[in-house]
Amino acid sequence: MCPVWTLGCVGMIADTAGLGACATGLGLAMDLGTTTVVVRLFDLASGAMVADTAFENPQRFGGSEVMARIQYDTEHPGKLLRRTLAGYLTHAIEEFPCDPREIREMVVVGNSTMRDLFFRQNVYSIGQSPYRSITEIEMAEGKRATTSLVETGRRCLLPIDPAARVYGAPIISGHVGADAAACMLAVDVAHEDRLVAVMDIGTNTELILGNRHRILAASCPAGPAFEGGAIACGMPALEGAIEGVRICDDGAFELKVIGGGAPAGICGSGLIALMSELLRTGRMNERGRFEHDLDRIDLAPDVYFLESDVNELAQAKGANVAGLQTVCSNYGVSFDDIEVFYLAGGFGRHIDVEAAARIGLIPPIPKDRIVQLGNAAIEGASMALLSESKRRELEETVLRVEHCRLETHPRFFDFFVDGCLFQPVELDRQVAG
Image (cartoon, rainbow, N blue to C red):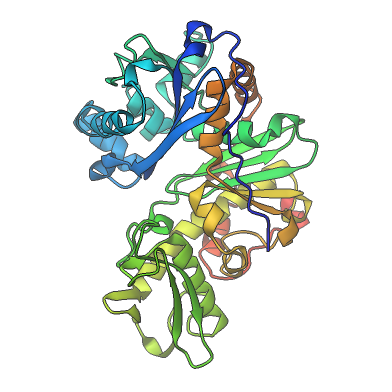
């Protein structure tokens, strides 16, 4: 089995130099994902995690991916924050075992759109070529020294100390946001001698490749398919979701269901396992077509998998693979040169890496080089919350990162088309060079 690491900040000793009076209170770290919001509560003096929670991002009524959210916010300014997220986040904070007004520090990470929506920035420019946050534009114009943001608890519409400092971590560039920056901090890319890759698969997949000498980053608009969105019986990884599938010798399906009860749908890890098994047994070909001209495979009562679902997943996979191919090509390396391949995020932590490699979602890297991290973005946010020096390191590191705009690579479309096929992904040294 490949290693599964959790970077856990529980018990971390806080480096509170520079946090001032805030070091005597409580702090929040938040990963504001397009699909899921994760929040941790810390004692700033000891660095101990007091509580944590997660909930589905209520902004999904404005669209399941970032471009739809940008359009919605342009047409309905502020509604995504004021009428949804602020209320859900307030409820989550009030459920914590503390007086919310003791919360005097907060760090927020997320992709560029999610972070800027939280801080009530105009996100229109992120949806238009060259896809830059207003903070990135202002920094290029010399109007600011960093893409990070700072607000007060009152201005963020939260029930915490009104004067609390709310720090939005810096974005890298374009859609490569503060969550990718936090991932870099969590795995310590800035001090790494080995060549490492970080792939945080989600609605907006982040890719990082490099070490202390050079770092490249890119963002892939993969869409919500691998998180259960746009799939007929898809669902998040909640109780009742099929998370594992095996096809027995007699053709029957052996299902692993979260919570052990009756299946209610299928989540991302289950989708990968299912497609891998369909490929292995010849019930689906590399183009995603089912055998015997079937258009539906029944897994359980009222839970089924459509051939049209495969098309959605193929496009999401194609975007992820094209991003990985492009970043490696720009760096001038092949997959064989990657010494550590981190799979980040809740999805990356739970997938079967053999199944993912079989369908071509990740490269066929030896399993002993693959590390399944869990949510590295919230880990990085927690580190930035508890350590002023880590926050400065984060600010310095993002300035060194080279942003890969995928669509400018001459072979991006070829990478995407090949990535839509369900077969092992390759990148030879001729292409890499």
